[in-house]
Length: 147
Image (cartoon, rainbow, N blue to C red; front, side):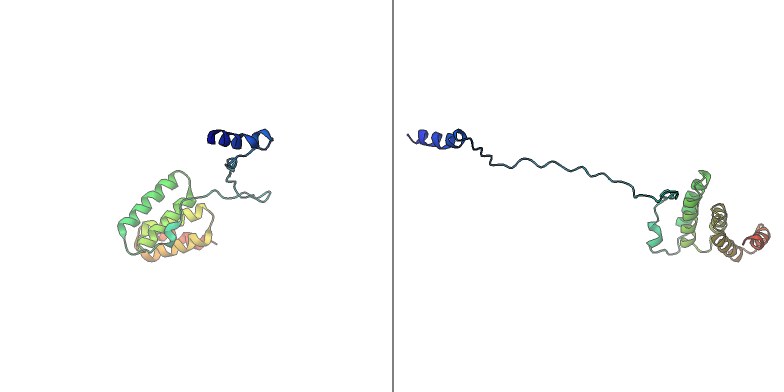
């Protein structure tokens, strides 16, 4: 008898047309699309370059890390990516301030980027670090012509 009462209690809402759904319908996952920021018309944004997190880290004297950064910068320069090369040469100078090779390559990369102020600063530092280098006189003459 209990079974009949239970069955009648369960079928009663169905017979009256009411539907009981104990679980809510599953929520549809929203598609989130990462869109690049909108650019102003006519302006061309520079492509993202190498990670610049090294600029925030603490640099102490480490000539091996400096030489490694020069090697990586050379590979970027060979590919024509002067912005990344300049960033690596700058990193090399942060690890070893007396790395003349890094300073002259930084100056050349800045010249390619037409950043004359930075190129002049790098060349001045190169001349002060390596005054007796064989291309030092050539760099001094170049410094006179840079704006």
